[in-house]
Amino acid sequence: MATVNEKEINESQVDRVYQRSIKGQPAQYSADQVDNLKLTILTNMITDEILLQRAAKLGLNATDTEVENRLTEVKSRMTEEEFQKSLKDQGYTLDELKYDLRKQITVDKLINKEITAKISITDAQIGDYYQKNKGSFSFPQGYRFSHILIANAPDEGKVRDRAQAVLGRIRSGEDFAAVAQQQSDDSSPNAPGGRITFISNADLSKADPAIKSALTGLKVGETSDLIKTKDGYLIIKLFEIEKGGQHDLSDPRVQTSIRNDLFDQKDRLLKAAFIEDARDEAKIVNYLAKRILENASRATAPSIAK
Image (tube, rainbow, N blue to C red; front, side, top):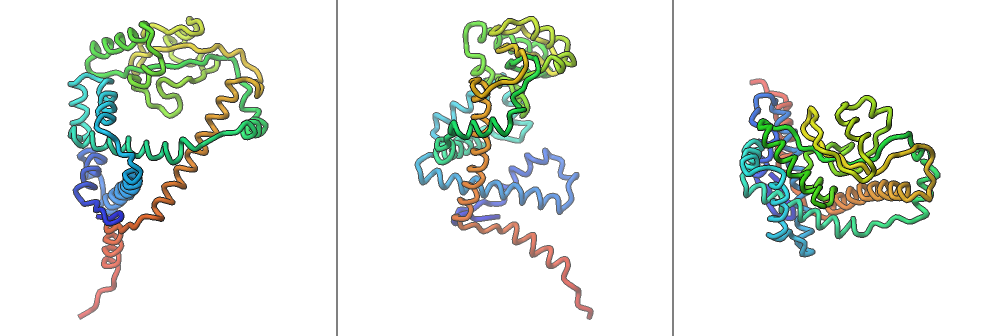
């Protein structure tokens, strides 16, 4: 379906990803929708191949140990039975999952070396950002906290047992953020499990009463017991009670927040530029795109009357 510097991406590779994407429901898609989805998949695979080839030249390929460690992280969130069911539901074999993990780790190592490790944010940039966004650092009263979600599953007993085990690790002194990264099932972009987030008193008054009761009953630095919610079990750690008002640039939290925002902006920009530059340098032939255009031309060509 395509070549990247003469390395082939064949139809079976694209089709495996396509089948996982449609989850066994091809009847819902028209021929044009199928072609569009496969073209999108192929475009992403081309980008991945470009980056993998760059990583290989720099000796950044993921090691077997790194792959096994990442696999262990994935499996630590569930029982072996749940892991096998997850593989089946997503249409993965274990070897395919390991291949994807190897690819992710390799690309992450490349991006970290070529982009992330080279980003620096100056005090002048932080000061300029603060002056332009000063109003963003006036906060209402509320709470800064982090959470871990153990999501609902058919076997309620296993879910609670898992939640109790996670809470036990925290009670025994393990770092909350580290446990959250391994165990939290909440991947919400707005407030993912493990990340410190803020809720105002006004918003908290509208929240689940169980969450409100647990959060307001904690002292700074304390961790809650298990909190049963409609989504599963929550574990909350309170980091700060926000008194509200304008925060100055001298506040370390303001500086950290600005630094993180500027870093993320720079990171996204440089990654996009890096990928485009890498594509420019690669020799790419997209046979699927050519085939789609040729088929469209044949379909619209005028017929010749006999």
